Length: 133
Image 1 (spheres, rainbow, N blue to C red):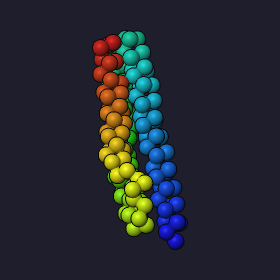
Image 2 (cartoon, one colour; image 1 turned 180 degrees about the vertical axis):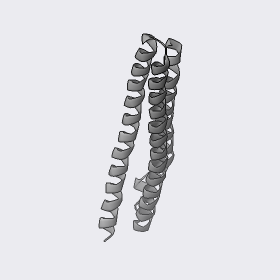
Image 3 (spheres, one colour; image 1 turned 30 degrees about the vertical axis):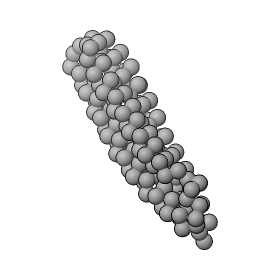
Image 4 (cartoon, helix red, strand yellow; image 1 turned 180 degrees about the horizontal axis):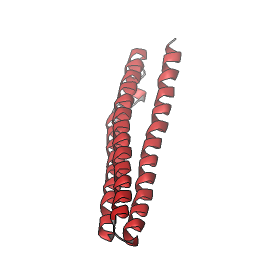
């Protein structure tokens, strides 16, 4: 039974990793696409339509980045819970010396860096087109 629990935790960690990767890549790609689109629209001229379209893209950037950030926060929490359970299981079996618990801090740092990348690409995607305008 313990092997099944172990395999389930490992599977959940794999799913967690894939989900986090999707959040990060989707947010970054959207931010870059919106940056290019808004910059091109802003360079094309000013007017009511330009402002409306840029506002729509800014709203999209804000929503997607908000969802990505929340997803990454939940992903970090999930990974911490799963790894904590895995470490407890390893302690119960007397093999905890083979898993370095400091990895938990490394994962937290990695999540923080992912969140910063998403945040700053979003900020750049919002601000830069206004310099072109």
